Amino acid sequence: MGRVAFQLIFKSFIMSTLKNHVQLIGNVGQEPTITNLESGKKVARLSLATNEYYKNSEGEKIQNTEWHTIVAWGKTAEIIEKYAGKGKEIGVTGKLKSRSYEDKDGIKRYVTEVEANEILLLGTKDGNS
Amino acid sequence: MKAQVNEIKEGLQHFHGSETVFQIPLLRTRYTNGIKYLAEAAECFWLITDSSAFAKTLMDKSYFVTIDFKRLPKDKQDYSGYEAEIIYSDGNGNIFETHRYNVTDFPLDELRLFFVDNTLMLPSEY
Figure 1 (cartoon, helix red, strand yellow):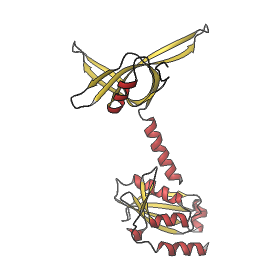
Figure 2: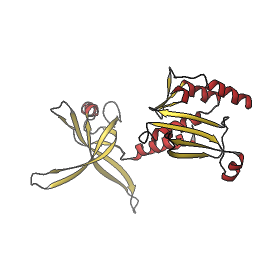
Figure 3: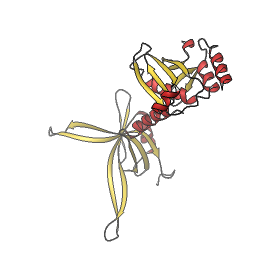
Figure 4: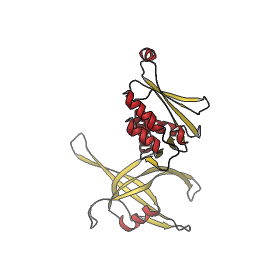
């Protein structure tokens, strides 16, 4: 491959890989909420816990859990509905999306969620990861 | 070398239009039979990928892109440090970009290609 071609392909690869790219591996918190829209589209919503471990100054192992909201549409939502129940270990790739809504008191709230475009089912077949 | 150059030049004259087009997978651009012959005879797939990749980025500037390969005269090579250049233009003298190559084993001294409709071709195949 020519130098120019390589540079251009590499640049476009890097741009598409790094631009708003999220990758998570964690456990599903609650049973995912599935919504069937009037348009026939399916939306799945779930919270995913990722765990990180570190040792503090006393040498104790500390677990740090972060919770992420995952939203998936269409086929990905169907996979979540069928296979990604509470406690399952899954991998998610997608992008960050922010939106705002008004709560019941009329206050504008901002949320950032991960919109999944691919789900990877991890852990064992019988459900325990 | 001279014989190879003549053979390539003669071979290139046989292409008029192209019944088959080939695709460069990563770039998703096409090239014709004549280009396939050139790439194999002159062992210059680098030229095909380079010119296709760059001409593709020019598609929003011009529907029609001409690609001119030129080996620089010896004195200019010594002076500039480059052996060859590829000039991308719209065919009406408006140059978009010039890429310089320090060294090349491309056998021809000059060559013109067209990039139209996402397809790289010999001028005779247009």
